[in-house]
Amino acid sequence: MNKKLTYFIRSFMRISTIMVIWVCLGGSLTYAEPGHAQRLSDYKLNLSIGDESLHAVLTKISEQTRIPFAYDEGALDRVMVKSGNYRNEPLDKALHSILIGTGYQYEVMNRNVVISKKPIPKPQLPGKITGRVTDAETGEPLEGVTLLISPSGKSTLTDVSGHYQLEAMPGIYTLSVTYIGYESSRRSGIEVADGGTAVVDIALANTTSELDEVVVVVGYGEVQRKDLTGSVGQVNMDDIVKAPVTSFDEALAGRVAGVQVTSNDGQPGNLPNIVIRGGNSITQDNSPLYIVDGFPLEGNDNSAINQSDIASVDILKDASATAIYGARGANGVVIITTKKRQRGGAGSRI
Image (cartoon, rainbow, N blue to C red):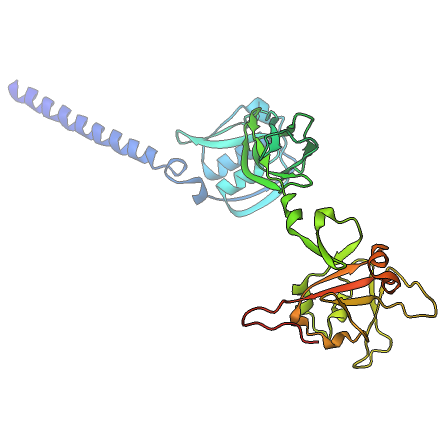
């Protein structure tokens, strides 16, 4: 009796051991199924899609790849997909292409591909950039200042109290500020939050002091630009020196408003004709009067003046020239100031 019982117990233990091993192997095989062990990009889809619903397309994909999909069948039956042919296409890219325009998205969750509706993005609320523009020296508000934000391109002007306000959607902006008589200002990296307000106060520096530094030679004296009432043109000497010409008067062409420089025949050595604000005489010479360091230049041979010796050229274009120089200045006056003789330097060579 004891032998039979012992044999029975041993047989039962063997069977139990075999069952445990079988269960373990079965679980391992289930875990190793293709739909679970591999990534979506490892599957290649070969499928032609016509006028079908999203539910029908997903059913075909599941049958071909043995990947389980989770979704609302009733809802996807009413969703149509665009036609297309997929040949050896990675499954993740194919799903992304198929779902475009459907309002649905896919996500891998717990070894299943879940198809769900895309969340509706929350609409952004417009924000604003506001502040006050004042004089940097006095602190007084500035009215009529132009403010421009980029990249939106919106602009506005300050009110009587110097305040301004610009509406802007959430993002990063650059504010440009300009005002006549003041230095321009530029602020970058202004962040506007969703429905928020960015406060940017600006103090502009006055540039009117530069007018005191500009000196114009008029007649036999000098006058500051701010006190000048007549029409006087100035020439940038840096441009004159760089010009490939034989005399400075040829370089005046197109550099001063109202001054016309022409050549009769283009022969080498011929002097150009300079007319300021049109000719005053039909039969007589319309050339302007040239003044070099306060002395009239006789003969109008401007090629005798070395361009590198010229410090500045001022051109009187209105009746003030006649008032200063008499009838000789009726056609305008070209005032040439040469570099003064300095220690170790040279004066004008005429």
